[in-house]
Length: 248
Ligand SMILES: N[C@@H](CCC(=O)N[C@@H](CS)C(=O)NCC(=O)O)C(=O)O
View: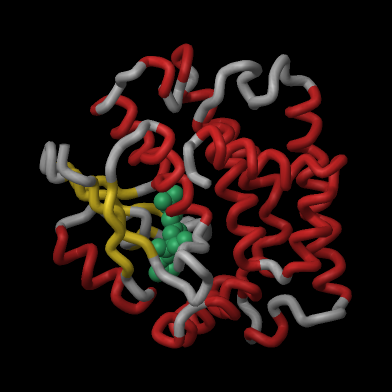
């Protein structure tokens, strides 16, 4: 099998990756044991690179339609797929075996999609804080684009997005804590270590990708605090997801 090509935005972090959206695809490929290769594209080049490839557009978190990463190009089938969820669905239907490496076990695709909406809603209060930290780890080639487009999205100057020590930052942190309590309540009701009890699924990939993002972009003391909330659940979930996906 030829490696699947995955488009992602690099950063200055070790291994370059930082984005939760592309992490969903990376974990999915790795979980299913599918070979893949990275193509790194700085933010200002996403539009031209992906339209030249003929990739479909997808929806950004602000609801706008645009070329976004992740995108995969599967040279084995010729498919070019955008949007992390659609990519997971493509991988599952194109490579359904082995059956115990299913991203959507027991016909759970729609329910996992719904879980993803809940997760995004629960954690949206921290979007500005995380974006503020993303800017700090991006390469020079992406920073100006990122700041300009996120100022527009948030409707404030960059310095106001999540100032250090501000009330706004404290509120963002509190909102994340409250959101993670909602997620913790889901885990507490599970009949096993995963969102679907004993069955690992793309729902866990979503949580793992969110935590990978925080681990990568938040400052060390911030991640230590967040990963320790809910009895240390978030650091543990990230470790468990990466182990299950053979991504260590
Ligand atoms: N719904 C898409 C959203 C992907 C997305 O927003 N990706 C960001 C990087 S994390 C992006 O490519 N943004 C392009 C831009 O802001 O111009 C998915 O789940 O794949």
